[in-house]
Amino acid sequence: MSLFKRALLLSLAFVLLLAGLQNKPVRAAAPDWMDVGTLTDEGYITNVSLATYDGVVYAAYIQSNPGSIERKLKVKKLNGSTWEPVGGEWVADNKLIDEVQLVVSQGVVYVAYKTDSPRSSYSVAVKKYEGGAWKTVGDSEFVVEGVMTFEAFSFYVDEGIPYVAYTTSQITVKKFDNGSWQTIGNDRFGNHAQAPHLYVDKGTPYVAYQETNPADIILVKLTGQTWEKVGNKIALPSWFMWVVSPKVYVDNGTPYVAFGQQDMTNAQHLNVRKYNGSNWESVGSENFSDGTQAMHITFEGTRDQLFVSYQEYDGRNGGFTMKPVLKQYLNGSWITVPGQGTFPTGYYDIAIAVDPGALYVAANTVDQATNKGKLDIKLIPLGLQISSHTPAKDATGVPLKPSVSMTFSQNVAPVSGKTISIRKASDNSVVESMAVNDAQKVNITGNTVSLRLNTSLASNTKYYVSIDSGAFLSGDGSLYKGIADPKEWSFTTLVKGDLTGDGKVTPADILLVNQYILGKITLTPEQLKAVDMNDDGVVDAKDTAIMMNIYLGRAG
Image 1 (tube, helix red, strand yellow):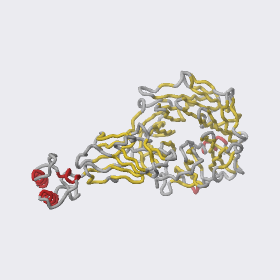
Image 2 (spheres, one colour):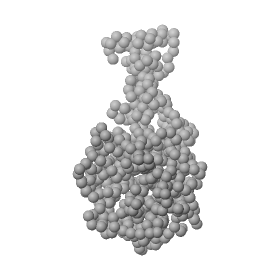
Image 3 (cartoon, helix red, strand yellow):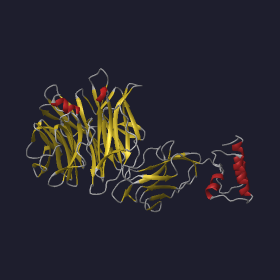
Image 4 (tube, helix red, strand yellow):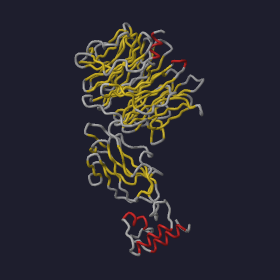
């Protein structure tokens, strides 16, 4: 097998999610993947890149049709349950687009993509969307003369400042500053360098890359105007034959690098290394994947978490299966997450993004029934979660002025500027909204949050609770992912006149009201509100007459 084919088969997109690892790791809370949404488009969906910002999911992908050489780069965002185009139906239309990277920084959507040339060259374009239309960042694309390679460039945006690293056997890094792209560092670096991966930590750029002759993994960082190696070359497992797709993440100055490697038996494995200030050390055991081809690896960070995600390709025994795998580093070992269930097999690409409190995974396939491209997006909640809430999900017969409360997995504090809302499910309209730091309306005691509603709800109506992403913060710095999906926490109020809770007005309800009028029983304030049919503040014979007419089908 040629080196190029090995590189292509192992073209990994690694997700290593880590930060604040000095604290005890937190096990993922969810037992299985949760559905977020499904995007469909004509033909094929490929080259997927995923991003989230403030609880909103964005997806960039290439759309193409069978038998056509045209390829359209599209970016969409999930608004409730609807996928909406960002900045028009497509960003670019070029038959040679083949790599896409999406970033959302400070509310601005950026997309970078590579376009191959019939000659031995390629170009990299960066565009941004701030409303209106997509605009090119800088005057034009980068036209790169040299050998076309897979994973030829890397894109990063640090606090609104875009960076690009690209290779033509040597690596160049550029930063968009003062209205133009400027090369940073006093020289290119690398000799036979491939697959650069860029990360910027507090303004300091790092680049991990692979050398092909000899096969090495190297990490450099920019010190002043000089690219310096971080430690020696990264120690590789014994009997390795080929290494691919290094990915870097830096946590408060401590670099981590993940990479794939193939041994002399053609088995392929994953490894993670950490630089401890003097040496590179293994994070967990070496070669911790099971030997099948591990493809599409990506690297990201989230507080107090360490994860690695990859797409497992198994062609053994004449079969062909592909499935995403997520592992968490916990107590010295790599544990598969979630413990039960898995993301479905039969998918092609995998893209991953992290938002406060959740890991999002997107995988694409073809819907055999419609012959359309399909992108399924799921999540696993991480860190701070709601363990229970009142009213319960899909509860019925809920009082018109209900007690609304939630219990978190840890003690929480409110985050200024964030809100909780009660919304009507039929049209998503806000019935009542409150700032989470408003102590008059939101009471927080330890891990319990209770709301004081001023508004009485309508009878026999479905509502749901929405919570801004990042509205609550735990003591270890974990943020709650929020609730945007109307199905996640919904409930239906009681039927006016229904005291027995059977969802309708019957003679039994009328009998109870008559007993109350005669002074034989007492009713709670909520029950009195439910049977005050004319809303005059008094429960009397006028109300029982209305209830009887409803029962007889004459009113209501």
